[in-house]
Image 1 (tube, one colour):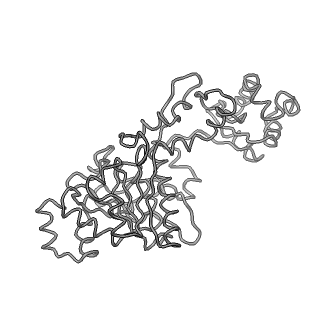
Image 2: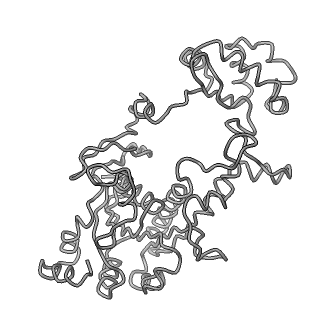
Image 3: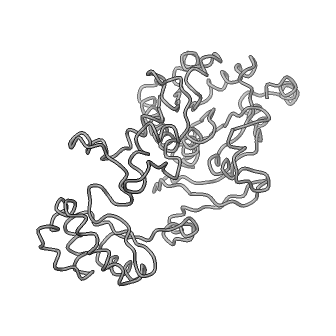
Length: 394
């Protein structure tokens, strides 16, 4: 019953970027029909870890979807796809550019069948430009897009960001672009192509790194856990662990100094303003670090929370699942898969007051809904469907 109720999505995606996008659309109420290769399915069905033989990786990205199998290399498979195009609102694919065109089912063909169709394509480098036909995975675009070059220990080697931000970023941007195109279609009646490149998304997410280079001429390097523009804004050792302190402006700095016993630093011209604290970081950090060692993480959290100073512990994944705020926001949900059984996964991050999204169905078994969907959408008989299976179309 989410805000996208009534919207039908034909999902031709696999692995991560595309499935993340269509998962979001499904979470928000769209009917998502996932088209998979017969017998093989989405590549990620073969990625571990496994629970009762089912990929937890796949299940965490493909909830709220229905699965049909369809061989798009066969003429009858392409015919069925074209029939789907008449009945759905959105197609999402993340093949290498040119793949759909070689199959004879690219955007130029499909928009003639349904001018209202929204065709969203997520790829490594986009559908234009000199790199367009190159293959890509997350690690490749993290490297090429600059994010690795500013991630890692100070003076250390460039480091890949832990989550697959190259894929996830593209999934998010593709979802945003798709919804923008949907709104335009609702106003004008005209569909369009949404072309999202993983590399483009990495560049768009570089935050202040480009600004720093353009203004200073200095190439940003890994800086560890400290913020390159705000001080203090990083983890500090406590008597029993670590705590991240984020002093985002000079008013917070004053409060921080007052509650930590660093009152003398408030009016010190070397530290009074954020640019000064940045300039004198090497002198300031040891002063803060010494104070923070005087109490436990829990004690500091209480003191800083009571005085409006942003802070937080460094949670490992087990602690994230048990965090009271995470639980209160229903950001860990449990679904029951027909084969794998119960599995916990992240919830829906977008909270809507009137039409909330929800996780209502587990990821499908390969081809679980093929018969039902072909009968419901096109009125196929069981004999016709059996014939398609025998021909290798399904």
